[in-house]
Amino acid sequence: MPTTEQQVVQQLRQLVAVPSVSSPDPRWDTSNRGVIDKLAGFTDSLGFEVQLLPLHPGPAGKANLIARLGPERPTDGCAGGLVLSGHTDTVPFDEGRWQSDPLQLVERDGGLFGLGSTDMKGFFPVALAAVAEIDPADLRAPLYLLATADEESTMRGARELPIDALQGASAAIIGEPTDLQPVRLHKGIMMQGVRLRGRSGHSSDPSLGRNVIDVVPELLALFDCYRKELARSYHCELLAVPSPTINFGCLHGGDSPNRICGELEFSFDVRMVPGLAHTEIERVLNQRLGELAEAQGIEIEMYRLVEPVPAFEQAAESPAVRAAEMVAGQPAGAVNFATEAPFLQRLGLDTIVMGPGCIDVAHQPDEYMPLNQLRPGIDMLKQLIVHHCL
Ligand SMILES: [Zn+2]
Image (cartoon, rainbow, N blue to C red; front, side, top):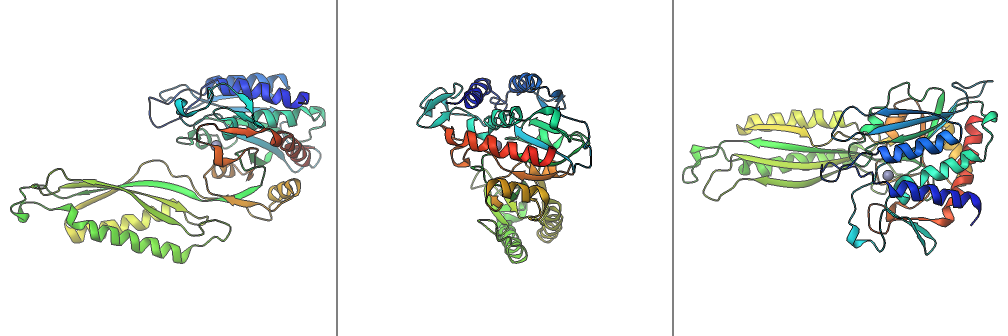
């Protein structure tokens, strides 16, 4: 194996060895500081100026890392610098189902096996190998490495980035595993709960209470009607499922056949296509649920189960998309998973998603990074650094 790839493997081994699970379940949730500190060391030795941004206090000490190489601002009429971005956390894992220790990187069958190898600790050493192949003195615009916390749970690392955190950059590449294909679009996701409150009472006399199970047919009809409206109004050909979807996830209520059911919880998710904002969905549903509550003489309250992630679309003709397509030799497409892209776009960055590894092996036992994507990944990122920063 050539020295550059050996270095990638060696750095990835160190990153995988440090657990950095993020999860809404506090039994799993751990700090990402170990990974951040490793990356701080790697970037520092390449001459980056390194900055750690602790997240607002939470149960575990977590931080984003922003490292900059080159000038603070673009010089000599250069259009603007580049951000190479990845998340430092992984999902929880089921050790017993792995063929080897998930925290110990193992090379076999043409792959590097380990937790987060492909999603997405592997991106960092590949990106840094690309940086190492350019002369920092040639940079005419800033080159950033951004490493975020909590992408797999709340995305609060990316959400909390200050508006001026990546000054002088005009484009960002998020290195989520796409088999090195450029991606300029994905759906957004929101997860909501709905609480119906009536009044419980003895089942022998319905007038003693207000049974919310009786309202379920109207509730489902309301959602089904809205779902059909959305499917008629929104369509995005680039997506495998081209319309917005609403999935009824769970329904819980009541406790006993001889009691009037006084309370019920219903939850659903919506996958939004670009152009459909979660605030619009909340506005429409709140209005209609309010009308239903009034008509049925019950209370209905809708709430967020998690903070929504907006849909993402980078215009097909934007310079960052064009550059990525040129380097990858194929047109930009769409993916089925959500990323931090809308939050980087919010900072004024033309954003694309493109990185080594395959999403199909992520979030499951025996996740691996294919060895044969390391060199192409380094080459593509190097070309993009040259395009944006030199
Ligand atoms: Zn990921």
